[in-house]
Image (cartoon, rainbow, N blue to C red; front, side, top):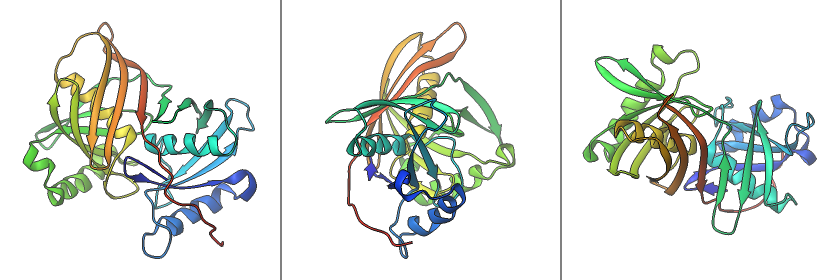
Length: 265
């Protein structure tokens, strides 16, 4: 499946019954674009035995590492779940956090259990914005010329992703360009993929909040459109000026089936 160009291999682990270690070891094999299927990560669907939510989403990066959350992956997961008999609105757990999903004919909306703020972080005489969206992200505003220079973004992204300020986990790096008050363009260097991707859902959320922050926008309810190379994502959120916190965060966008097949372990 793909969500705005972010592509994933999904499978029903209720029948496959792979262990967490087996899923971790399988991720680099399936994600390899030459010797495997090729993806930005793999996603396993399970029942939630703790009964905190209807389902569990297990996500692994192409290198087998964990991510706190994958927004585009979650939208694909939700659409996949409905083909297996899930209702169009349901809850699912990622690690210890419970999300809710709504699937319709045009898009998938994920509600994030998240309240967050925007923090400044200085690195080598430059200021970046640190925005936690249930996974680690930093955001920096760049010129249109820089945003289209992918070799430059790769270099900067790789350096910042591994910077000592973000050790040991590292961070995802988002480069943005504001178009108008409610629209921006985004390129993300993703940790675990170790490359620029066509889209990043949690990066789109971080970037929308950062763009709101950079404009000194007031208290209220907002909808921002984030253009990525793979398409367009919509971020909904509320900003409370009294405590500078962002809440009621939703990620909306497409989730498309590309192909289905059988993989022999």
